[in-house]
Length: 156
Image (cartoon, rainbow, N blue to C red; front, side):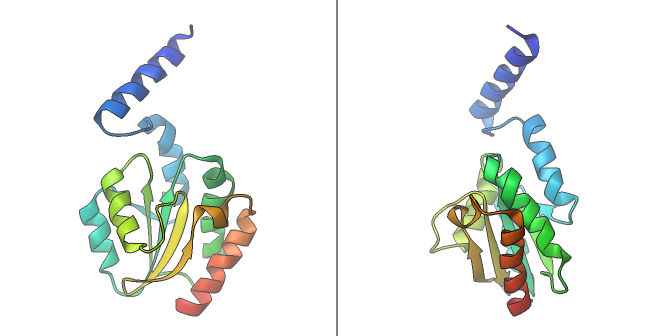
């Protein structure tokens, strides 16, 4: 058995026992894909609550390790920022990593059920547009970006 594989298995089991479903080494590049585009990565319920109190528009991306997040959600979120209108604030939380932050973000997305990946646009703390996982999977990033741009044009 490969030593690196055994080390990764051990790291995963330790992370599961103490906090995260996924090791930091695995999710860091996925987080950086959004933070490099200007998203603030939030790790606590308090940080989410503070972000949701900000005036203006806020795009919240619930990031995920799944294939549709890599292929569709993250690229779509980044492409959506190429338009003339953009949200005032960009935040992201990571499902399976920061449970407290994700739970806090999802409370603001009610009545929509928990979904990852997902994207929600808020205006002055009020949910005005939602993309659930079933709106993301199987759709190209360009279509997701256009959907978000339409929402930005209406609310931003």
